[in-house]
Image (cartoon, rainbow, N blue to C red; front, side, top):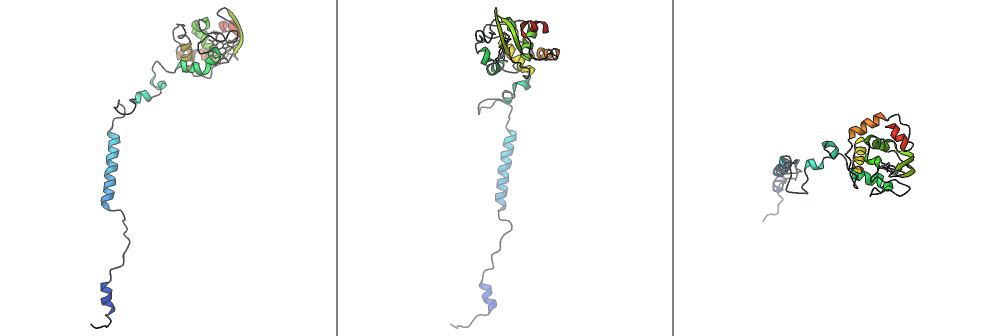
Length: 199
Ligand code: HEC
């Protein structure tokens, strides 16, 4: 075997060519596969009915999730809930009040009687003498005019209908018109007499 050196060109032919980096690293078929999966997922989302009762999840429909105020239904607000949050601290959850301090709402003519006077009590509050169920109170009832018409209507409709009280509900329209009619009332009503005159 001869030991002579082969010419460079022949040596070069045996070498593999230098590796070079591909511009497109992700293979076509993979891109197609991801695309197909994305399209399938999207079409699945759009073709699934969302407004109907489904057999999955907690069974709520879109109508159930819509806030009651927007549906314009009878139960615009939860009057009992407002009562629990804003009024029960003084008038008690039972509506019986606290003897000598906070008057009862149960059986009170202010609650079960004229809806306009009751609305005015909520809108502007009372301070001064007021007789409730034959007893005289001299305290301060804050105004609740910052509540919406719906909220005031809801809470007074509630106190007119629980604990044995059985007076018809008060509408938001009544609250709205009383708000307008008493807009010149400065501060709280000075007791029961002022309330009766102011209605
Ligand atoms: C800070 C305590 C307090 C809170 C809270 C309060 N009230 Fe009163 N409320 C009083 C007092 C005190 C009077 C009596 C006022 C007086 O003596 O001049 C009164 C009187 C009334 C009256 C007329 C008298 C009667 O007993 O029928 C009504 C109706 C009434 N409140 C409803 C409500 C409603 C509804 C709420 C919740 C939105 C509420 N009050 C929240 C203290 C409170």
